[in-house]
Length: 188
Image 1 (cartoon, rainbow, N blue to C red):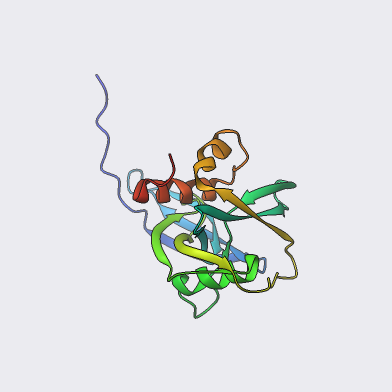
Image 2: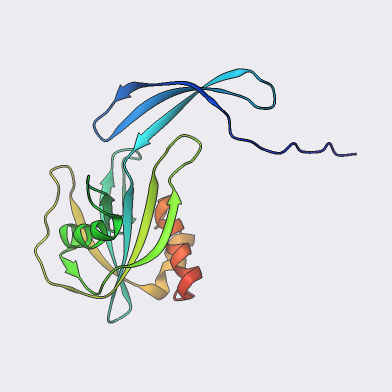
């Protein structure tokens, strides 16, 4: 006979301290008490700023995407434009700014697609996704010093195949595109 699962409860925080500051994120050590056992456990949490992705669609039903080299995997990835939410900025402001800076494209008012947690097991930030319709090339790009990007226009109908073939493999991009698909049924 299966055992009964206890009700899950939050783990009370006993102490917390920053143990590393690495410019774009901090590492925090938390000691928490298990409500089930009463024992103390140490956890590490990456404190990172929120960021957002942009699903930018042209009038020809193409998705504006970027290719860029990613240090973590040492691979060139096909991704949605996006970036970190600047201090004092709302994510809905970040989306058109990042789209403009990374691609030169601009369009209609951003529409929220929602958010996901990047990795709630070890990270505390949110990743927002916004849809911007009717985008067109209107500006010069403004890359950050640490990024080199190439803009790619991808027909929306090709997105599922690119995901299945592993050409779009960044988990947060896949999550954003899935959320977009569920909300709009645009990707077949």
